[in-house]
Image 1 (tube, each protein chain N blue to C red):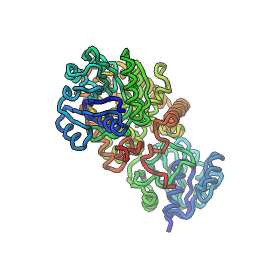
Image 2 (cartoon, rainbow over the protein chains, first blue to last red; image 1 turned 180 degrees about the horizontal axis):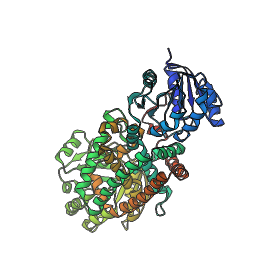
Image 3 (cartoon, rainbow over the protein chains, first blue to last red; image 1 turned 90 degrees about the vertical axis):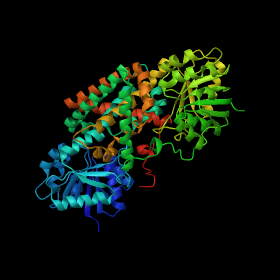
Image 4 (tube, helix red, strand yellow; image 1 turned 180 degrees about the vertical axis):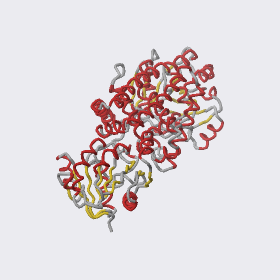
Length: 306
Length: 306
């Protein structure tokens, strides 16, 4: 038995595409209907058979859907919610996959009609690729999906939780503000810093672009992956999680200045102690199954080398 | 014919171990002699047969060596150079693998006797692992080795270049100051920023360590790999490449403040333009063969997933 007879995915990027493939693989939805604003994305999705049906408008997609998942950039959520509201089925659940929760709740919540359940969620999974061709069924396996139920109907929350678990995710519940702070630390600030470092490297008069690229294996290349993520999605994340991001950036700058001062003053013990402490975090992440222990992320396939 | 009859490696970490294995694999050295300050490292190296001979002191190791490579943290170079100087063979070449060149040249150069060639070098290759067990023969393949010959004997420079190329590296020559600036951009500043971000995450009262670890796949985990590198090596890098690192950090902070201001002011077009521009760098690195194009660095093995 599928969990939902009809699931509508609004937006056909990496997350929606992966959800469609994962739901099909595990038989979680009777039918998956998808739509995207761009004609090109819809055509690609049709060509690669990404969903069972691709329709031209969001209002059409949500008709008779038991679950509607908003998979558009955070800044586009309010307009989509306004568009679909009149077409939502009574008793349906509306969810989203936005990287920010407080702002999405404030943008979408007021549009949700009486009798429709709104259960915001955020799968912590992704790659640096985007668009309808970038999805794959295993994206969510062993990753976390954070559900922010607020005072939503318990049965609706539980069913959405089952969906995410059915796609391979671990799930946890959190309130919106804590979610936004945790993500400012684990995602938003790291992305901003990676973008900044790439901007600096791209913009130096005295070191050429080709030097930056050729010699990137000395460390820089690790930053370029997340700085290759979708620009519109990330623009919206920073604009909508402004307060938490600025708070963590403030902490980051404070910490950076302390290290900068230690370098200027030649304070070796401070640096060594700092660098020893941060090693433990990597160990924790590997033990928690959230990254590979293979050196260089396993990118070099060195197993057969020695 | 091997390029050198006898090669002495001082220090038995990731780089020395990988050099020994690579030189053996490609028949580049008649004999590889290794030594390390720590009794434990020497014992491990003996147990895993890392070199042809392991001796107890640096002075003993360099006896009759045609090539001596200093593979110790940058801050230890001067003391090692002083120790080996009286034992160096006339006509031998001394090189190093330090991540900083100006400081190493000033520390080692004065100890090099008349008739011995000093050819500093820096292989841009590594992993987050360290110690005598971390080496592997393919580490240098398709990576760059920067040689900083100064006014060294051309034949000695050419032979060392052949050695690095024989181990699979591309080679280039540079002057010391330019090397230190390029590395401040591509390696030293990225490492410092990664360490900083890990420090911030580790030190927040309102977000727990376990949250940071569990939810790290949202971006943060990419930073933890290089922040797991050897603390002593990195302490020495920052202390000895102080000026260039502080210069690039200054540029980084300026850029970060501009982005922070755009977030505060809600300047979406600025952010989007910035994030679009930095995407191109990743493409350049992949095209130059300096990183994998597989999503998530290939760590998820998703090929069979869709």
